[in-house]
Structure formats: structure tokens, C-alpha cells
Image (tube, rainbow, N blue to C red):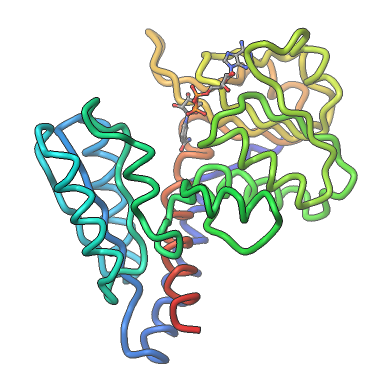
Length: 281
Ligand code: NAD
């Protein structure tokens, strides 16, 4: 079984991006800039944002974090986004989710100009991705896609099953696999027989949030299995896939942690650079 090393893949991607940033700097005499807005003091969000800033600095991006207290008014955040939208030194804007209840998430997402939407959540980018046009692609599914392509460069005709239909993961993942000419089944909490669906799959992407949902006897021999889940349990962090059981059947499997997670941040940097390049055309 191939253990898909997300840490290594992410380090390789960051090294490529670092070279690209250096080339862009010598060509344009400026570097792509990422601005992250962090609202409140949720510990996981603070850790994510710190890691994003560290990785952005590592590849040579200009990075900035704007912090607001939990009590910040929605209007203040929307005005700041407008200011960043017209700031030429800012290539990408990300508002760290989740947001406090009094702030409308959709309003915030839609306030970011689509050309700087490095998360790929703006309806314009969602539509462009589903129409097969150029767009920012949500970072986690993009990371999954790059890991799958490392194992199997030609996905045409493969049967893929995506478990979970969130806007963040399942739906964009489905679009990426469709673009590669996979036959894709998207499954969710109302799917009648999830095991039977998974047993058909050459590729399984699990993004559910249920610890070890996908079992060893759900997976066809030689399937590629990508585990997006991050679940805190009494036994530590586990994915949505039962690692020990599935590793006996699968051709390739991502561990949790150390699989999809590290690729997510690397893909955010990639998206920032892509936004910068499109802005220079
Ligand atoms: P979500 O809660 O938004 O969506 C979960 C999806 O799973 C829903 O579409 C739901 O229909 C489906 N589902 C629920 N129960 C099911 C069942 N029994 N069978 C089949 N489908 C079922 O979750 P999300 O935001 O997509 O996140 C999923 C997991 O991925 C979580 O564990 C989250 O922490 C993790 N995550 C990881 C990363 C990363 O970088 N690795 C990034 C984002 C999310």
C-alpha cells in the first residue's frame, strides 16, 4: 500500500511556489500578497491563521493578518474587504471561518471580489468551476486532487465516490473529478447504502466528519482513498476512514494527520499566486 505523504507533497509544492514567487518578483518587481482577516479568539482559527502566515512567508509572499475582536460589527468587516479589494498590493483575501453569529457568512464571502477570492467560495468562482472555466478552487479539494494525480495521472473513466456534499469539500471535489473525466457519485447523509457505493469506487474521497466511517470491507482492492476528515476522539485525531482496516485493501491512502491537511495551506499559497498572475495579464 502506498502511504500518501501529504507533508512531503506539501513541502515539494511550497518549494515550487517559492521558485515561482522569486521569478515573479524579478519579472514584475513585486510579490503576490495574501491578507487574512481573523475575527475572534477561537484557538483552532488562530492556529490555522498562524500556520498560513508562516507558510506564506516561507515561500516569499507578502502576508498580512488583520485581527478583529468577536464583537466587531459586520459593517466594519465589509468596509475593510472593500478597501482590500481595491488595494493593488493585495492579491488574495481570506476571511477565516467560522464567523461570530452576528456576521453573515455569505455576505462576507460575496463581498470579496472574485479575482481575489483565494478560498474559491464566491458564487462566481463556484459557477466557473462547475462550468469548467478558470477559477479559484477551494484549497482542501484542490489539495486532494493534486495528491490523487500524483498516484494516478490519468483519471479518465475511473469511478470516483465522494462521501459528503459540503460546499467546502464534497461539491468542489466532485467538479474536479468530473473535469478529469471520472464517473462521479456524490454521496451524503441520506444515501441508502454507502458501503455498496464505496465498493464500486476506484477513488474514494471521504469528507464527512464522522470518525472512521469508511471501513476496510467498503473498499475495493486497489482503490485510492483520500481522507479529508479531522475528528477529535479520546484516542487522538482520526480521519473519516478506518486507517488500519482500509490500509489492508487500498492501493493508496492518506494518513490523518499528515495527509490532506498540509496540502490545504500549500494550495492557499498556490491560489494566491494564481490570483496575482491573473491580475498581471
Ligand atoms: P460538513 O459538516 O459541512 O459536511 C459533511 C457532509 O457529510 C455533509 O454533506 C453530510 O451530508 C455528509 N454526511 C454526514 N453524515 C453522513 C453519513 N453517515 N454518510 C454519508 N455522508 C454523511 O463537513 P466539511 O466541512 O465538508 O468537513 C468534513 C470533514 O473534513 C470534517 O472532519 C472537517 O474537520 C474536515 N476538514 C478537513 C480539512 C483539511 O484541511 N484536512 C479542511 C476542511 C474540513
